[in-house]
Amino acid sequence: MRLVVTKLNVGIWAASYLKGTLQAFAPSLQRPFVLGLPTGDTVRDMYAMLRTFAQARTLSFQHLITFNLDEYVGIPADHPQSYHSYMYRHLFDYVPIPPEHIFMPNGQAADLPAECAHYEREIARVGGINLVIGGVGHNGHIAFNEPGTPFHSRTHVVDLTPDTLEVNARFFGGDTQRVPCRAITLGIGTILDAKELVFLASGVKKAAAVVHGLTQKPTLDWPVSALQLHPRATLVADLDACILLSGELKNRLDEARACNPQADEWILEIKK
Ligand code: GLP
Figure (cartoon, rainbow, N blue to C red):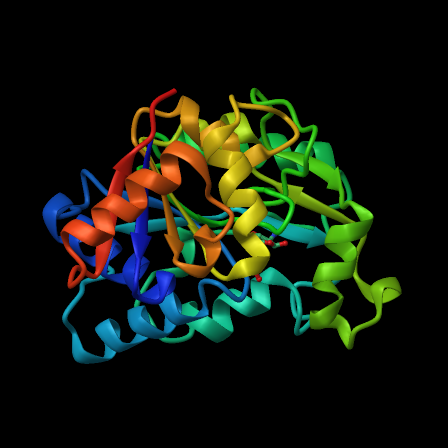
C-alpha cells in the first residue's frame, strides 16, 4: 500500500483523484464504473467538489454505479442523519446518476441478514467494485467495521462500539442514547475485494488510526491496517493526521518533505 500525505484537504484530493480515475476509465454502458462511497465529515468537501464538477459539466457521471459502504439500522431512510439522507443532501440530488444505479444498504429491512446477502449479490451482479473511497474512524474502523472484525467478513450487521456511539453523537444533538447502536456495513473482505481502495484520514483525531494502521502488522485491533493486504490501496492523510508517526516512517516523510518542500503531497510506499 502507499501513504499519500497531502497539504490539501483530503476530500478535495479524493475528488480530483476520482475525476482523473473516471476520465481514464471512460465508463460505458457495457463497462460501467462501480464506486463504493462513504459518508462522514471527512468527505463533505469531496462531495462539494463533485457537485461543482457536475454543475460545470467537467465530469460525466454517466455509467457510474454506486454502493454506499454503510447505513444505520433502526432509523428511517428519510431521517436527517441516515446515510441515505446524507447521500442525497451531499451528492445524489445534484448529479445525474440514475436511481437504479444507486445502491445503499436498507437499515430498515425486516430481515437484516437477508438484506446483507442481497447487497453482496448486487455487488457481484455488477462485476464487483472498481474503487472504494472510504473514511477512517477514530478507532481505525473502515466503513462500520469496528476493531475485532475479521478481515474475511462480508456485508453484515454490526454493534457499534461505545466510543463510536460517543463520536457520532455529534450528529444526534450530542446525545449518545439517540445514536442507532447497530449498522449494516460492507465487510472488510468485501472492501478488500474491490480493485482499488482509497481511504482518507484528516486531523489529529485520526492520528492514532494512521500510525497503527501503517506501522503494525495487519491486526484486527486496527481495521484500517487491512489496507496493507491490498495490492492497490492508498491511505491519504493530511499533516495533522500524521503527527504520531515516528521512527523510520517519520524519517522518510521528513526526508520527502525536505527534498521537495513546495510539493502539495508526498508519497511513501509502505512495505508489508
Ligand atoms: C463513521 C462512518 C464511516 C466514516 C467514519 C469517519 O462512523 N461509519 O463510514 O467514514 O466513521 O467519519 P468522519 O469522517 O465523520 O470522521
